[in-house]
Image (cartoon, rainbow, N blue to C red; front, side):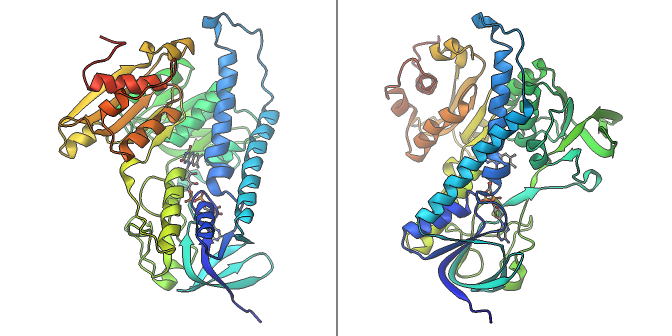
Length: 465
Ligand code: FAD
């Protein structure tokens, strides 16, 4: 017979949404079970954020070793053992997924391996290779994430790669075509270019990295072009022919048909929420017109007791947004008055230089009717940036004219991914440019760029005129 196991909170999926939700729910006193059909840690830890950043970092090291002659450092020959690099990358992933398993267990959350499917509004069937089990829950948090969009003319294969395939190559491509100039395509394209591959980027729109100001994305294209990357915008990829040793991609570039040859093609044209195979229609969970699960400010779906978080709900598909919603959902289930507030979700591109943005940019602030002051400060005027030989880039701060309230910050420059956190705190805390300008920042540090951009906003910068 099949007796149902009863739990307080059942979490489906163990990515940065699911595992964080499970831990927080357990911390708040719930009996929690988490179901995962693949590897603990989801896309982010296994085939997303973490392995991509490991490859990017390896690319920077390799590239820097070959290009530090400004500092008087020249190297005769830098070698790359790609297999060893991939082993190192996997070891980073394994450390983190092992760590997540320890954290889940340490919080007394039960882990069930298998695929969950809704049987009813208060129960799921969990299937593994051998058997099916029923779990009855009081509350459920769906965190099944997303997967790469596969376009029919480019079925994923040995040489037609999704981001997962591109992260797990066993040889360094001599030539790589990247279809799609979003952040995933640009990060992976730049990483392989730094490691020595010839890279061609085909972007359908007018600009790569839509969502970032043109001035910011141009810094990235400039550096990548210097490294030999070719860019084609308004390039619509139409088909691919796969041979034993490579691919030939046909694309219409500004109305003209062109062919491109390479040993691999990476297709990164977006991601789709995993909402189809879990029985949502069975229990009446409502989706929006784009296929994402509709939720309110406490991450509740249209069905009582069922919550949804992360890539399967509307909003940016980012790990930190998933983890944030995870905590809100777990707290809402525990009866706390938690609510999502999307004022300050940072977005980062780990390119060279890095791009980071949070809050409103100039155009968005004006569209929302704000009277704004926009201040800007160059990395080249910062002592630390100079001593790092990383002088490219700038910070922009958008503040409300009447009182200096920080509405948004955009950074293009080295370590922007870390620098943006201060701007996130400033926006969350409702700080003004003056608050930041009057805060003592360590010298010499890139953080001083934030202080100086705020000084520009109040009209009194020390290090530029
Ligand atoms: P996921 O991480 O997708 O996890 C969902 C989990 O649910 C999976 O493990 C899946 O196996 C499981 N699952 C699905 N269906 C079922 C079922 N029926 N039963 C049981 N288990 C199920 N974001 C950033 O913030 N920063 C970055 O630098 C970054 N880099 C990225 C790089 C790449 C190459 C990619 C692809 C993504 C990147 N992302 C990044 C995005 C980030 O990975 C996602 O936003 C994040 O993983 C979403 O978390 P999630 O918990 O919603 O879902």
